[in-house]
Length: 349
Image (cartoon, rainbow, N blue to C red):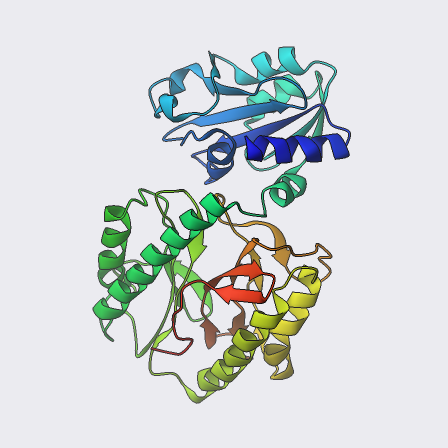
């Protein structure tokens, strides 16, 4: 399995005996388990153990036996145990283990059982770097997610009108997403002022609307594509000028060999020169987990490579802290530069 081979190469480089990939439906970090096993967590949590040598194992708490299609897993060794941490401690005693999800995903009881048995090394960044370059099959999954997201944007756009609630406008898009195979892998919001907010019935949309649309299609790859709608103020129209500069610049900046720091500086230049604060991260790698490393940001010296996929979304905020512009695109790094996969006109619709 290509993914396991890449992870094992990274383990050997870092002097580790095994990778322990943590996934939990409770935190939204289930995608890493899907990435390494093919299993989709419907409920509860799971771990995938990938040793440098030997076969991988997927470990579930016993109560999770009937909360997912276990036959979909590409890993034959499936363990159902009352206390996964205790079982893993027995397998990993004296080992040096790179853990994806140590800080945010692993349950407290399993950490308590493991911490004295093995040396646990935080390995989020390294795991994400190992999966950042997509295969052709993964890129087709990404493109399918983009097609669904774009259709969802148009559903949102067609429902939008000043005076309608955010819930009313988001509902047709969410319906389309579920019908097209996204399941629960949608996290769609609107920006109220410069803040992200859930699309609630009590939120009434005005003459200008900034949606944030983020979904994963049937293949499990997350993407982000959205455009602002309505009538912008003079300040937001000025922000659009910076967005147009970013969009042009990114096509040359997102190239193999460039660092994430270089890309951030290049695409943020038009915003900072106009005096805007960038509220959200400029961009980030995106895959089966919505936000992955490397991020496109200050001081990140990771070099880009062909077939990396990034979500780019400069979040321009005016001095008053209220007016903002936030539009998302999913970009592919190619030898010729960055390609925005949506093919959606960059304008305020």
